[in-house]
Length: 321
Ligand code: NAD
Ligand code: SER
Image 1 (spheres, protein in one colour):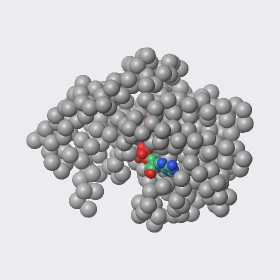
Image 2 (cartoon, rainbow, N blue to C red):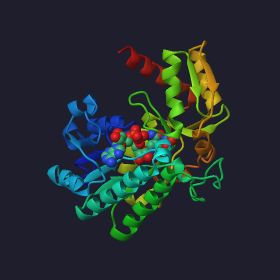
Image 3 (cartoon, helix red, strand yellow):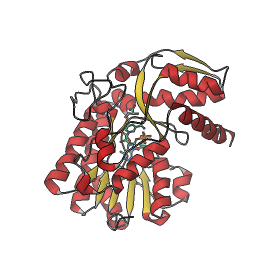
Image 4 (cartoon, rainbow, N blue to C red):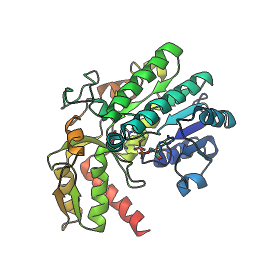
């Protein structure tokens, strides 16, 4: 651990990414040095049992400040957010959590000399006018969802704090994350996780996007590596800060179903697109992540066959348990 990163706070720690990233951070930096927080009660047992846990609503600035003081926090992984599909159902909530919550985190970080803040952005910053194959690092950012809009604002706000206040804020534009531990929290890419549960449990899945829908995705081990690699990168090498494109793997819903079928031959996938199809159609198929590769050495480790094989193994173990 660098000398500046000794006491870490994770917001939104019970979510899909937080539940696994928090454990990885505890393994790496010491269980006693990573405080998990969320508004979920009761929180996931594994987080409570492996280190400190605090109830924290990020829209309540004083509560955030009190936890930063109590644990002498110097690093924040800010994961609390409302994702794209839930955000379209409740745009006011998405604005409140994603914008006001982030503003609180940045302000508390500025006032308390926090060394480093990680704020994930998303492929949702792109919109229908962005080139889709691949989406360049520097490009048109005109999203059509409230979630995307908050993510563009978040990137710009973070970059402003870097430039204006010298706060070290870093972030990647995550693709859809695929993982076995915690189900996704209301995004458009959730089908790429749901399909595994349904394939194992019922051998059938009705997918809410078309078979030919291609989106950028990433397997959780790569997602965690990206966060830690970027946070440990030498600041002087970074030309970007809050908006790195990071590629994992891109595939169509049909290609994913076909790969799963290689392991579960009687699996049947049907397609019944709903409102999330329109969101998916506004996002790119692939992203150009050369900036991340050049500035902090990013390279994903999973492709479609290795991801599917590992995901099925992890999920079968979990569901049996
Ligand atoms: P998630 O929905 O699974 O988890 C978010 C967590 O935030 C939940 O546990 C929720 O209880 C918590 N939360 C909601 N409102 C809160 C509040 N007011 N105060 C404190 N906590 C609150 O999301 P995730 O997938 O783990 O995403 C984490 C971050 O990564 C988000 O910024 C998200 O935009 C980003 N991201 C995720 C994906 C993905 O596919 N999972 C892709 C791109 C970007
Ligand atoms: N997986 C996320 C979503 O679909 C992308 O940020 O909302």
